[in-house]
Length: 511
Image (cartoon, rainbow, N blue to C red; front, side, top):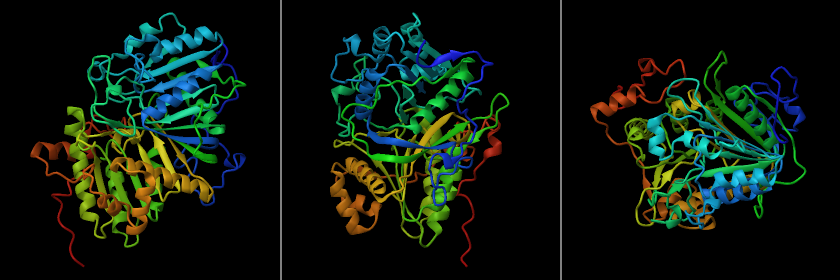
């Protein structure tokens, strides 16, 4: 097959393998003042010729549909979940099977016989698959004629998962972020109540959901291709090589937000099969928190990591430290997450509320115009409007050492790039409130604080997210971080990771 071709395992191939550190002087990336340091808090730093932020899966699915249609050599999809029934165009009918991505991938191969299409999806346990409404092994039936290589990837350790969400097309255009390809994941920026475009094949309309993806080309996209090839090799034993196309797979009508921007790739990989764990995602967060001067803005599904809590608490104690703003889901949709992640998050919030002696910590949960909870599934962090981070990594233990994750971080070198990050931040905060980004920027300029500016808009859509007093059982779950191991070594010994509740610790003595 053309595109990504299998080669013999013993053959020599000139591709950069995961674990190798590239010489940054070859990329032109100036590390003297950069946060991004390969070998410390990221794997590689490469230049994206074009880089765009896709807010909500309405934008992501539209861009993906365009890029897939331009593929001529290869399509590689790494996913936590993949439902071939997913319609990239929500206006299409459920009865229109040609609108389903599984059918579209097969038709692409029929139209372009040299196109190599590969999917590597987490082999989720039955209980989790049942909650998704689609069992992963059913997707294999869609691709049984081998037009598309579809493989299920079991985790290296019981209880872990492969959580990366990366798509590479022709080794030239890459998507990376937190969005899954599934029937319950589409939504628009309006997050409309009961939007029929969110309707699933079952007829149910899932709750509104916030997602963010990034798309890029150039050397940064090729680096994500290297990551995908290594992941494929580890799972299947098949080594593949890149095969570039002459055509441009950049999505039609999509204007880049950044040009010629250094982009870091940060990974989480658990220890397995003799390989050491990789904790670049954790290191990058901690380094960015310590370095931030003015603002730390985070959108994340979970917020339970004691390491992140400690780092943020330290900055809240600094008289001249940064403002910290968090946006997260009010109540998790699954019962398991409610008793594990929500309970542990309450402990973290309590700790930060106690540490916030200078009124610089703000936490919010978003709602629709009619008051329905919006699920915050995005994993976005912005530091001083200078670094924009998008990926699959949650702010919990398992995303830092137990699951497989991939994030990217853009760090533009010029004021125009930093202005673009600021505009995105204003836009995403504005969409929570129900206003445009410019209106929010004007109020922020007057107040001087992001959190206070959010409070000024009394729309009822951004509600304060505070620490709830736990029950005795919830406190035990939170203290031992049940369901949230820090590593493969730690997975079955929760007594080793006990984090004493700050509600019960002695109060610090007054000096």
